[in-house]
Amino acid sequence: MSKMWTIAYFTFKEIFKSKVLINVFFVGLGLMLVTYVATEFTYGVPEKVALDFGIGMLSLSSLAISLFLGVTLLSKEIDSRTVYMVISRPVPRYAFIIGKIFGLLGVQLVNVILLGGMTILVVNILGGNLSPLIFWCVGFIFLESILLLLVVLLVSLFANNILTTLFSIIILILGHAVKETQNINFVKRNPFFEYLLEFYHYFLPAFYKLNIKDFLIYKNNLNSDYLFLNLSYGLLYSLFLGILIILIFNRKNLD
Amino acid sequence: MIELKNVTKVFKSDLLTQPFIALDDVSFNIPEASMVGFLGANGAGKTTSLKIIMDFIRPTSGIVNFEPSLGSTKEEVFQNIGFLPERPYFYPSLSGEDFLLFMGKLSGMNRSQILSEVGEWAPRFKIDHALKREIKTYSKGMLQRIGFLATIIHHPKLVILDEPLSGLDPIGRKELKDVIIEVHKQGKTIFFSSHIVPDVEEICDRVIFLKDGKLIYNGAVGELISNSNDSEYLLTVKIADGVNLVTPFKQLTLLPDNLRRYIVDAALKEAFIRDVIDKKGDIISLEMKKPSLEEIFYKTKSMGDLS
Image 1 (cartoon, rainbow over the protein chains, first blue to last red):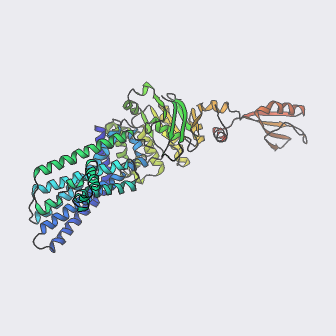
Image 2: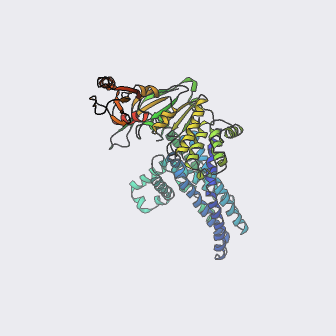
């Protein structure tokens, strides 16, 4: 267990020192600036604009970190043979992979706290209502980034960096669009597509379940059953992907 | 310490490509407290063998046995092994000290133990001045040295190095070889792959040769050289001007005072001496000229088995 945390700590430190979080800081500054400028052009609802920009930026940066750092999280280790240094020690492979995931999630958490905190601060300064839903929304963004990271890692065990990026983006877009697509008349009239989308629901991650931004910005309420159900979905799906990644990585030839 | 038994590794990337046999029924062992060189041209199967020993990849058939002195579980065995991969590229944004702390902690050491080891070894590795710097600023030689320090920091009984000397300049090679010898003198078993034959000949007591995935020699370096059929003799002969010797020789150098130096195949030595005596010549000196390990190695690239 302690070796897993050692790997997580040094993974976090390596990414932290590679100045990724400085970029996050500048995104935060940019967010405040853009929010200020936008509110100058908005009559009556500056706090909604601030919330929209803030949550949007947070979501984009979290997904970008999961996607672009996740793609190289394992492949870079294998290509540069650093993984050999680590797993030639008395370290089980599962500890290595979980440590790497936790290390990157540490970076992700700092990003969420930094940008989420700034958004909440700006909304508060502009006199907006800080409902508990905003915290749910930030939490769901974090969960969505975990889910995407695990999808990226799973694909990267089989594909190269370019294909991993491409497949992951496709899965992310499909995961967000699948519900709306089911409501299209063309799909409703074609049982084949209906079954295909049903099938998708059983096997691939439905990212839309973790997207409550519209509810937060336009409705500002959501029943707690929906929230807990989707939270459970996100956690269980992440757990499933995590176990799958460990099982595959344990048997993978690292050549 | 380690025994490979009939290990075969076949790579097959997809259905359309021919299977590639990287290792073909290879068996050898690494005796305790020995310094073993692992030789072979590029693609001979050295790195594949090391990856199988370290369980990075699984053999198609065959097994790897570890002596009980290394431990009874995988964790215990790996606690007693230090491994340095070929051309390692460590975490570039970590400092050298951070990297050593990372590696030491993974081997179950605490911070003070690690720093004490670093304090002892870093000056000998000439890396102490750079420990606070980020690894991305290190030269190739420094990377190899810090990699080697990380490999031995936890006092492993067996040290496995994959091409530790490649890419280093002569001074860097000499420094690293000195350190490897020093570690070996502490009683550690060293097993390292290389394609730089003179380095292996210089510091190893045993050698394992691989060629095209097949084992062609496993034994003592001295034995390989002395058993080689390629021995030659260097004869200095005093003989009258104009006299021709009929026994074939490999090379002739004319010296002052009617002296001649011949290089003769071992098999023709006696016939040559008789020839000299018959022609009323004097044998001034006779010296056996053994081939170097490198000469033997390069010969095996076109020939067959050495054993």
